[in-house]
Image (tube, rainbow, N blue to C red; front, side, top):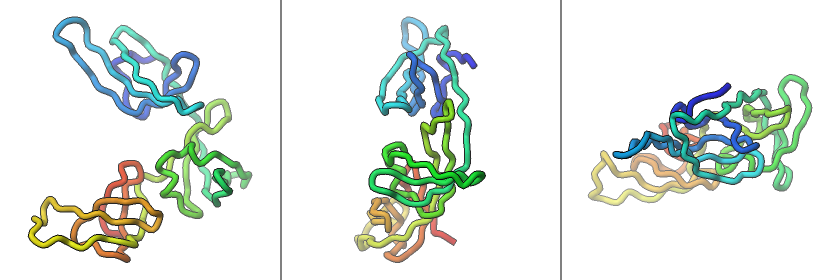
Length: 187
């Protein structure tokens, strides 16, 4: 499906210069002289390269629809991650770097969505939010205002996040996987 250069949005999958690219960031720019354009930061889903490209409104680019399939994360095997197809129970090994920073949030038995292009997995989507336990939280510094002060904490998976002052070690919290931010206490 062809779309105009100014209709590109983060998360879109585009076919560009013979590769498959995922849009990470966009910035619409309207200079004082000349036509408006969209500055697009993209990551190649096959080899991991990143690029910045300017698309004008007259430019068209092919938007790719990926097939999605539900899988379950089983375990890590070295630098490979093992997933199971929830329909056929077939197992598939994928490199951990396919997930990027989100790999730290994988939990045994977690349901994930694999995006497939030409039957080949090119990305893994975790749930937006996961529960994690705080194993280490800094003490609150007296005199800080409660409204804007956050303190650093370390989760059970080793990831550092900023949490409100009342959150202590041992507390289960909900974390945004892709922003790495505190969402709330786990119920």
